[in-house]
Image 1 (spheres, helix red, strand yellow):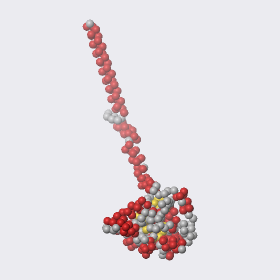
Image 2 (tube, rainbow, N blue to C red):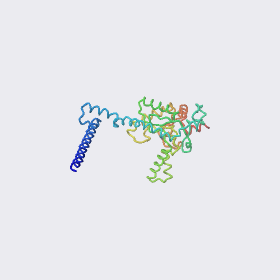
Image 3 (cartoon, helix red, strand yellow):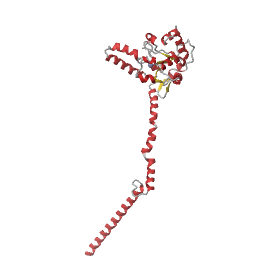
Image 4 (cartoon, rainbow, N blue to C red):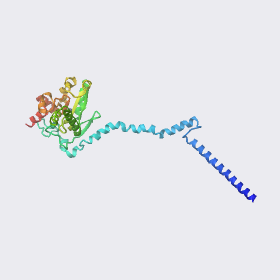
Length: 303
Ligand SMILES: [Zn+2]
């Protein structure tokens, strides 16, 4: 019996020793393997550290991310234009083929000339009006048919020493709605009735679809020296040399001062020395010669 017990005890002891040895070997293997992976270069040489850095660089997100994320960022301001242009009817060809391919008309045959389209309180921009648009100076949307003339006018004015600055060009109907509603609220806050406030507001802000800005044919432009003195669009712009240049030269580029001081009764809009409308060179020069605003000129042509 004693021998049998001794044999069992010895077998158990050998087994324990064997298992312990196996565990020790497994543990050693794991420790050794970890230090080789480079994650923790505990006892590594300088070269190991360098190599572990150079290995981690390409996979490091902090290095690769700025490159990929810096691509969408500069694009986003431009991306906004196409997205804002989604609010523009962007298919002029199918809906209005006749207007897009308008041939140069004779000066006195203006009936369907897009350049002479009246947009005012009594002539609302059609709901389905569409035009091909161009973005100028990286941000401002204008009718593509008139954009080149506008760019030329701005460039020539600047070359002549006037720091012309665009205030606004194309404006969505929704934006007009917002500005108009705000102006009405402004008048109501100082005691005007809703009806009177709407009338007064319309003298400053064209109600939606009565604004040439909705058609992409108008620009509000001042100069940086004016900006330094006045924060808003005011009649005082007429005292600046940049206004003198614009009013004297705009017709050469096909633009007219749309709301002159002496035509307020006819246009229904308060004098705006900053607002210019594209009508084409021959019409602009003729209007200047006849001293007519667009309402008068269109009537004169048709009459
Ligand atoms: Zn304007």
